[in-house]
Image (cartoon, rainbow, N blue to C red; front, side, top):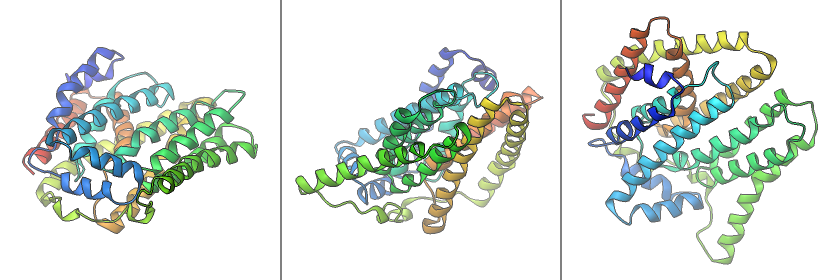
Length: 327
């Protein structure tokens, strides 16, 4: 079955994503106009992608599929290498595209989705300092990657707080560990500012990154559909949080440090989600897909009753397909 296959540490099962992800492509519920409007406003890397996406109708489809597969695999590798689970599995790679498909924008690549690979890579570099004698190199890399992500979606600059929180629980206090990520964060911004000035490119406008232009192109799910999804989604997440808390209490200090850092990252992304929801009454799915995929994986990794986890996963997959093709 689906959950049983991804619950094992068998890399071959990842080939199933080549079937699942294209099926979850937006279909009738298109967010292309919304995604392009967000890409054209604000930050330089997002504007570059917007110019590429209008070259041909199939380019946005290809980019969306590649980003969904790539971010799912990055999250899967990050969760396993950082030991966010008590045993290796590939459930995050399955749940990530499902969570993206359940969001209003789906897997259309907006600024937040464009910057997500750099965010995940930055988290990986940050959490790699656990147990190392030197940390300045990885922390500079982490700040640099978050700075690049902020050139796609400016609110990601706030995630430098996650780096600081991770350092606080993983290493004794040294002021350089907090300054170096901030320096790395500034490097891409000033390089982009200099290049824009030299080549007379449009100036960056960070405050427009979260503007709600194009929001009217997104359809809203019906109340009945939302209730049916929440009927499974909410208990699944509550079960995942309970399992995560139990695992945290049984962890050794090294594992607790990384799992605490993940909670800090989840809280930071939830804050960005709150800002987007208040401003636009919608949100990029990339902001919540990462923590929800990991927490949901905890719910079905050791569910107690296998048939319930299978039923919940198939229910969410069916809801995502309905949202994309029939919504």
